[in-house]
Image (cartoon, rainbow, N blue to C red; front, side, top):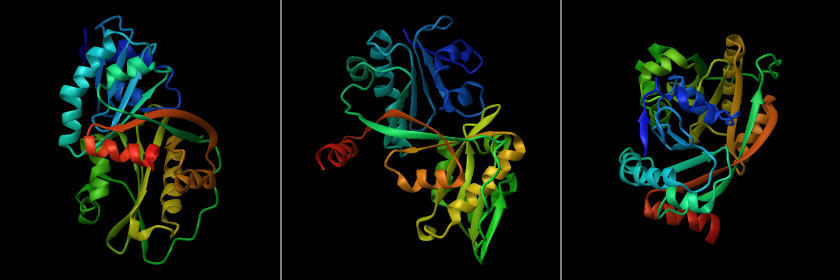
Length: 287
């Protein structure tokens, strides 16, 4: 049997997700800082659970061996969650588990899908650490700390990547205002880069960062991230930086900024769209 728990009920699954020490999303969702849905195999004494963040990420807890939970949860993923993802233009999913997942359990959870293993890195920056040296701000750039008023700025809200990030990470702009913070870099009147908080919990947050393709290789990502680290330090928050193993630009920037304590983990990556799944398989296996 699968039950969907309200956030107030989901305290019962928190011990199952205790092993996600460097992945903040489950705790951020279970404390209602970030949006998400929680499924379990029992309303009061669960042994398995899955959290969906409403966008691309699925977090699995339990022993990882095939059981009725994986079979039933697979039906929900196929019949309800994957159509909702595709309807909102979310073609990819990322599955994370603190336990090794048996292939039989994975096949039950994602029937008909062929996810691939994808290595990822987590870095940390403790708030007590000194900031790295700042860099000169380029002429024509403006650093704007995030405020509620910024959500009414045409420069920011006309940016497709930013609005997608906002929906995928926070869904409700008011939740971002309440629990989030960050910095935006404008070049003229165009949003060129940003570094914003993701998955905030009591003493930590993740960094979400992006630079518009037209403004890459100009040091704007460093500028946005440095400003974000200063904001995090003022709030007493440790910062986590997560990226794919093959994203050299991302992990090189993290290391330049002084992030360390690298932890590696494996995620399962794929698509619920058949054409996109074939593209992924071709790129990673057949290419």
